[in-house]
Each structure stands twice: as structure tokens, then as C-alpha cells.
Image (tube, rainbow, N blue to C red):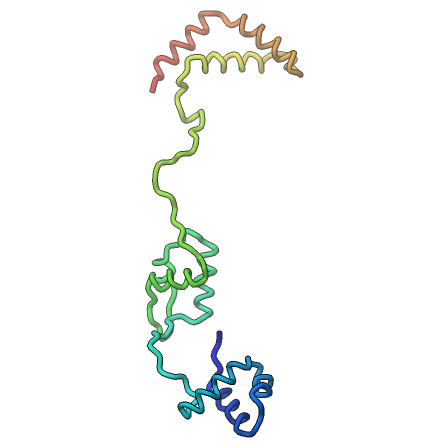
Length: 187
């Protein structure tokens, strides 16, 4: 949440010392009631409206740069944090580290993705693998013969009849030849 500027804090204290209520000052400055209440208490305790010293390290990137980092990673989920860090210049021309990018992504509930490196477990397509069964080539020959028929079978019954006819019409020598070709191509 953005902090009140120093000018607004001093203006709020001026309104409070002039006699305005805490709620009226909050409405006037368009901030929450508790913000003005805490400011008033801090002014009474320390006599100042400036920020108290804290142990936090100042942020290296602006909110706009944080959004830019998020957009880069939403567009490319596999983008490495090191590449984003190299492309982003922080405040005062400082380089930001890859860990800073990872921290900002974690704050935005974005998690790192990486490409999978390992065995490809997808199914191997038929043209890329040798046929391991001798009957495969015979079925291919049968399929070719059925597709060459005129007219092409139009329903299941015609297809069944065509398969039976073509199966009986394939000469044994053709089957032996296809099987012999298969044997020389074993993997």
C-alpha cells in the first residue's frame, strides 16, 4: 500500500492541531481513519511525522518494473530469471539479481517453470519406427488392394466382403515376398 507523502502527513497534523476530528481529516485526505490515528499517535510520541528508521533494505525495483517483470514471465513461462535480471535495470542504474526476480515473482504468486529435459515419452509414430510384426506389411498390401477397388466399398457389409475377397486373392508368393522384406529390415 502506498505511503502518505510527507506533505500530506504535515497537512494532516496541521488539520488535527487546528481542531478537526480524526475522521474528518481522514475523509478530507481520502485515507483510512486508522492511518490518521497512527500518524497522530506517532506525532505525539516522537514529535515528528517522518518515517521511523527500519531495518528493511530498500527495494531495488519500482512497482512499474515489478509489473514489467510479471508481464515478461506471463508471456513466456519458460523465461529464465537470469535473462530477465540482465534485461532489467533497477533504481539508480543498479543491476538486479536473478534472485530478486525470483522473489518478485514469488510475491506475485508466479512460480518458475522450466522445460522438461529427459526422455521423450510420447508415442512414436508409425513412419518413424520399423514394423515389428510381419503381418503389418500384409495388412498394408490388403489395404492398398481394397482402396484400388472400383467402386470403393460404401458400407460395413461391402467392406467385409471386399476384405475377404482380397485376402483370398493375395498370392502366397506376395505374402512370402513381403515377409522376406520384413526380415531384412529388423531393428
